[in-house]
Amino acid sequence: MTITTRPFVPAAKPIIGDDERLAVDAVMRSGMLAQGPEVAAFETEFSAELLGGRPSVAVNSGTTALHLALIALGIGPGDEVIVPSFTFAATANAVALVGATPVFVDIEPIHFNLDPAAVRAAVTERTRAIMPVHLYGHAADMTALRAVALDHGLLIVEDAAQAHGAVWAGHQVGTFGDAAAFSLYPTKNMTAGEGGMIAVADPPRERTLRLLRNQGMERRYENELIGFNSRMTDLHAAIGRVQLTKLAGWTATRRANAAVLSAGITSVVTPATHELAEHVFHQYTVRVSDDRDGFAAALENEHGIGTGVYYPTPVHRLPSFRADVHLPETERAASEALSLPVHPSLTEGDLERIVSAVETVAKAGR
Image (cartoon, rainbow, N blue to C red; front, side, top):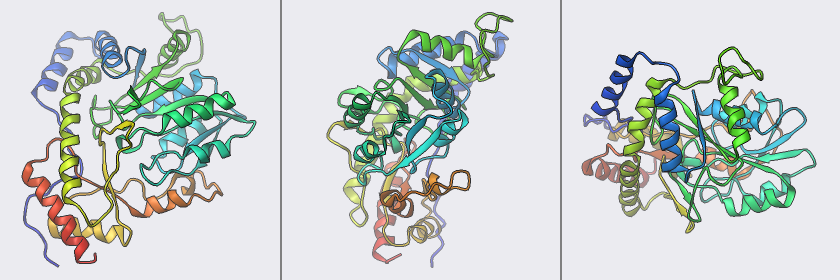
């Protein structure tokens, strides 16, 4: 085995530049560090850029966004919410935190998203909502999922944590459901350092979300309901506002990088994009059918190429849930999915190295 001495190509690389630093410094000089004018401006700009004007409410994380959205929709004990198991645990955690039951169903094998047929088969008299995850930056089939929701009178809460700007059938994700949650964690396609955003379909629920994030009050010491301290700071919002102006360019670069990878990689299954979707490539995820983990180790140790495995253990098999369900496509994806670098910081040389490394490792049978 040859250990490479070439510079390491990381699987992800947050981009924080002078513009973000200047924005944070301006907030520091203002003395207004908590939720304030930067948060309000960020909400307005996020809504205009990514949600076609649908209102958005800034909070302190993507998990909080899911949690508060479910509360605002009135989902709680006795209710079931249909979710994928091939996702980060926060999706199901949010359901459990409101006292509802996450019902895990399988994914379709092409785009790793909820299988609408499996969703329809899982609906019971207790089902209140469907929570699709737009995984890796590819939108779930919202046409089929909305049809299921309409037929059964169900709510839709979109987990768009990885899909800022992704599109299905000409509409941006976050605009299909009764609510949607975005993450602004450092490794996402844009970041606020940390934070989340909730897109909401109607004004009463928007106001409820604003109360919930701020101890249940709109005016100081006039608490209207039991709430949380889930506010976003102006420091984080200032970073997010700058990042939002760069998102479109970064997305274009991610798509261009993905196109180079797909043109050059022939020995493993590369990502497909549905004809109705516009992929934003939060991750560029291939399938390695034989010894995925060994394949990843060879890429790193012999070629200096970082990778990510999202997600090696399906949520339904985690100790926190342990659901007794049979999800064959989920299990297969958990053993085969491997995400290669696709971030905007990659150079032409980096992309050539990734292609060459994948082909070399695959042909060596590792």
